[in-house]
Image 1 (cartoon, rainbow, N blue to C red):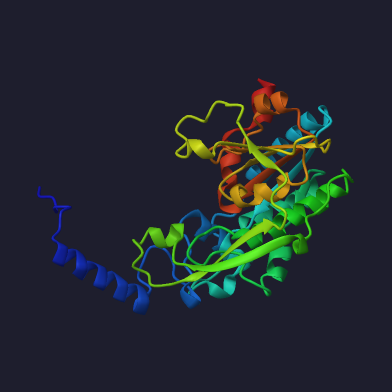
Image 2 (image 1 turned 135 degrees about the vertical axis):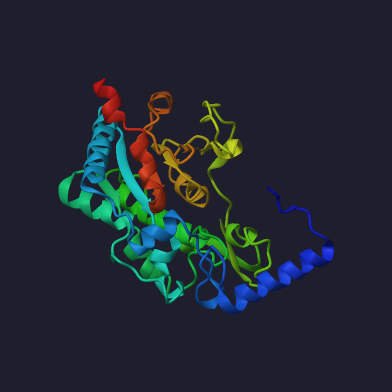
Amino acid sequence: MSLISPIISTSELCSLKVLISFNLKHFAKHPSPIGNDGWLFFVGEEHDSYLGKRPLTSKELDDFKKELEYRKKYLEQRNCEFYLVVAPIKANIYPEKVPHHEYRSLKASWGEQLIQYLSENSDVKTINLYDLLRKKKSTRPLYYKLDNHWNQLGAFYAGNEILNQIHSDLPAIKSNLIEDFNIRQKDTCSGNLVEMISYIWDAKECFYEIKPKTGFEAKYVDTEGYPIVKGFPYPGEYEIDKEIKGSHQPKLLVVSDSFGASLFPFLAEQFSRSVKIFDNWEYKLNEEIVEAENPDVVILLCLESGIRGMLKHLSYKTQKK
């Protein structure tokens, strides 16, 4: 059996790039769907979630309900408010940018399916970002066209929606005022999706940088060094801590994925101490961290295409044992 050599000459590489670039631009031939106006999208679970493939089953929805209700009760016993936030995938906010040949078998994505089920069958507090982001996108882009994440403006609006919901339970927590922030923008050609095709997709987009006019009040502090999940590929992002010196505001714990990175600084402005944990897309309760931090608020932020990761670590079943 012969193998194709992975080593090619410079001229062959140039020819290959020209061929791939031609296919991308003219035929959109790439595993990552290329939509209107040069927008790139992930395949795999994000793609399936948008199209309505493999919808959450009755058993999965029941497991979500039992798990989240267990967490709510566990945290209530510690005088802590609990909120579930589902981060919408880009395609669900910008369906008009998705390739026209993509056919949706169901209108509700996995995240919308879960939020609707919980709102009808449980008292777990869910924060729905779908309507907000769909409304706000008419002003400026809220997601990157060359990356699957929301940009800083999208994160700002999402953070304010979360803070508004928390305010109803903890009046000391308020939303941030957009007029108190400077918004700077610049062109960029980077993003995790365009990196996957080696930057041969010739496109640019606007990058927003949003900072308080007087600087962030919450400052980064040394981490507590909570044990990192084995095999986590980004150990430097596992634990991030911020504090406002001398503040008597409530304390916050966020368990999230990569969507929490740009969101966290805006949330932290309203809390005396804030800790963000990126637990390898496991979305666990993380009891040892809860007990060490004794937070007043716990936010579980899950990208909708990854929410099934929570079902691999069910605390309510473990507790029964």
